[in-house]
Length: 138
Image 1: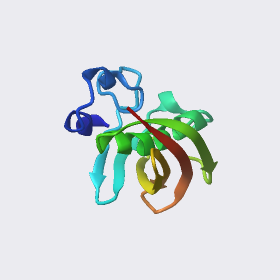
Image 2 (image 1 turned 135 degrees about the vertical axis):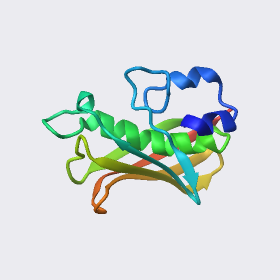
Image 3 (image 1 turned 45 degrees about the vertical axis):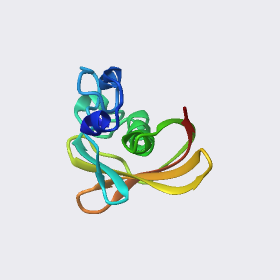
Image 4 (image 1 turned 90 degrees about the vertical axis):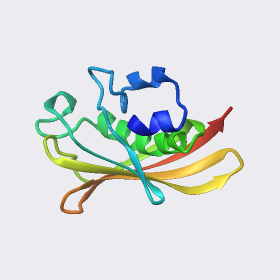
């Protein structure tokens, strides 16, 4: 959410979000922005987020994908919760290399939204893909 949180009217307490909060000293500090129909952030993960040597922990990968999907709805002014999340790990997600995280809306039915996200290396390799069903709440 980063700078988009204020634009979306999100309260300042979310600035401690593990994925996107600037105030969380342990967080990823992902700074997403809206690009056309996509929610995008770039990051380089530090060693603190690794599982195996040089490879991001799967939970961190899952967190980044989840944030790209749910955070997009929040940036659009909707409060949303993840109802279901599935992750496909295609290749190891490296530590210390530039990553692009993208999330987008696939379909919407009433207050339920199907989302997709992926993590991409600079050479175009997709390291992980996620799908989610989000519930928009009051």
